[in-house]
Image (cartoon, rainbow, N blue to C red):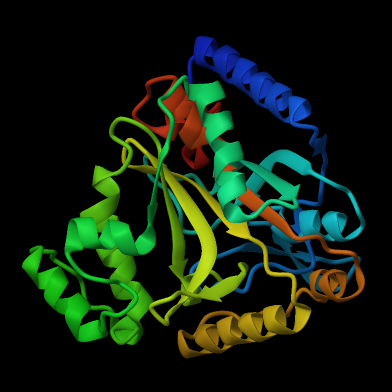
Length: 323
C-alpha cells in the first residue's frame, strides 16, 4: 500500500518555501510583475511530443485542457502591454513520470521585452548564480556542442550520417516506427544519450541556436553557412535539463503555419486532433506584442539540485503515486 506520508521531509519543504520566496525576490528586483493565468484552458499546445490532460466541462459543452505551461496566456498579457512578467505555477504533462518527471510539476516562466535570447541567457545566468551560488554559466551553440561530442555538424548532416553516428556510439535504439525518417528524432537521440550526460558538470551550460524545426515558437535566422536556426536555448546543469527559452516569434501568420505543420505531424502519428489557440494568434495579430524573449524553468528540478537530492520526489510534498 502506498504511504500517505509526504515524499519530502518537513525540513525540505521549509527550505523549498524559502527558495520560492528567494525566487520572487529576484524577479521583483528585476522589475518583473508577478502574474497569474488559467491552468484550465480551451486550447493547448500543438507540439506532437507534448501530451496534455483533457477534461470535459459540462456547463461549457466543450473540452478543456490542463496547461503544459502558461506560455500562451502570458503572451496575451505581453500583447496587452504588461511589460516584463513572471509566474510560478503548476503545469501538467501526460506520460512524464520518473526521477526527474512528475505529471504535475511547478514551473517558473518569465518574459523580458526588448531582450534577445542572448540577453535573456545573461539574465538567467544572474538568476542561477543567485539561487545556486554556482560559477558563471558557459555558452555553446548547438552546432558546436555536436561537433565536440559527436564530431558532426547537426545542421548539415543527413539522416544516414546521424544513423552512422548512433552506431558508432553503440547506442541500443528501439524501433522508431513513424519517426524512422524524422531527422530531429535522431538528433534528439544523440543529444540525450551522447551529449546531455556531459553537460554542466562544473557550471551550468547554455546551448543555443537549435535547428529551426526544433524551435516552433522562436524567431529563425539564416547563418552565414546557409542553414536556418531558431533563436532558442536550453540550460543544463549536472546533466539535467533545467530550462527552455526563446527569442519569441511575433509574426501571427508564420506562427499559424507552424502550428498547422504540428497538426499535420500529429495526424501522421495518429494523435488526437486539436484546435489552434485563436486567442493567442489574435493577440499576436492585433495586440502590441513586443520584441521579447522568454524562458520556462522546472523549479522542482532546480530545487533538487540546490538541496542535493537525487529525485524530484524528495523535494515535493506528494507525487503522482500518492496524490
